[in-house]
Image 1 (cartoon, rainbow, N blue to C red):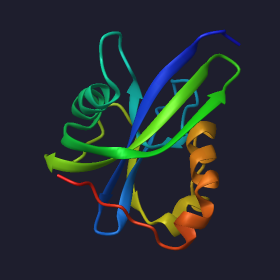
Image 2: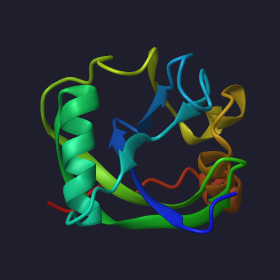
Image 3: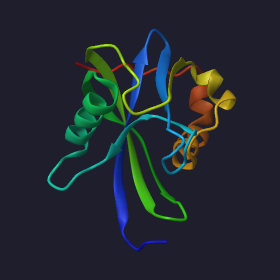
Length: 141
């Protein structure tokens, strides 16, 4: 495991009581697992800037970034990530599979049906009681 921590951001994009999840391509690390949309923060970027860029590149959408929803640090065998999950909303566009091999809009109660990346699953488990209560926090524009 590397000593450095990689900063990663993700979007909790809500629409009509559901949120967007993406399936990683088979050829990438943690291939075919589900995750929240997002990616690595590049040098000189803020978390929200990175999230806007990642959603534009990977999904073809423009988003508005809201408050931090949750954070977790997770050690994978190949790297350690600090994942910050932001509330987000779509400003324009319709999500398309530019880099992922699957996209789904799911409810909080459906998370158990999907095999998530461990860091994303850790956030979901950490917020288990919140999900069960049907929590939904829309983005403030």
